[in-house]
Length: 125
Image (tube, rainbow, N blue to C red; front, side, top):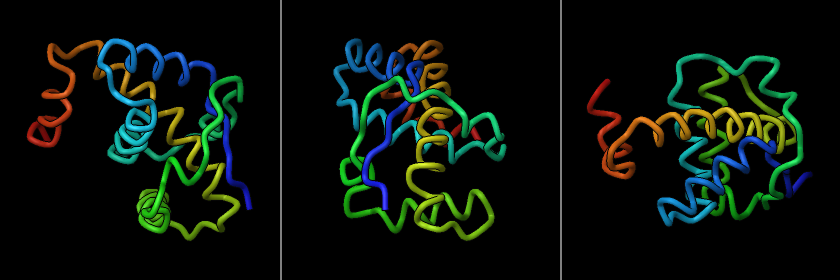
């Protein structure tokens, strides 16, 4: 069972930039990225699973913590299939982090007040 993953270089750059400008912890941004990726109705593409591993190394416990089973359930619901633990982590988790980082970057670039904007996202649906 894997306990670490490495983000893509692009995801790490996005997280570093937003962390510096918004003073939000790196791992909070990672969790927000997963949430934004899961919020998308589009399934992961094959290319989402083949991003580089030149970014930051993250521990599973720090990403999912006590909610590991919940994260797995949410990702399975999004994927619409049961995932083995090996598929879930690092495969699907990394894919959602890397894809979600791009979504997070878009939200950050086009919002006036980033945190307020994130809290208002669901109201716009």
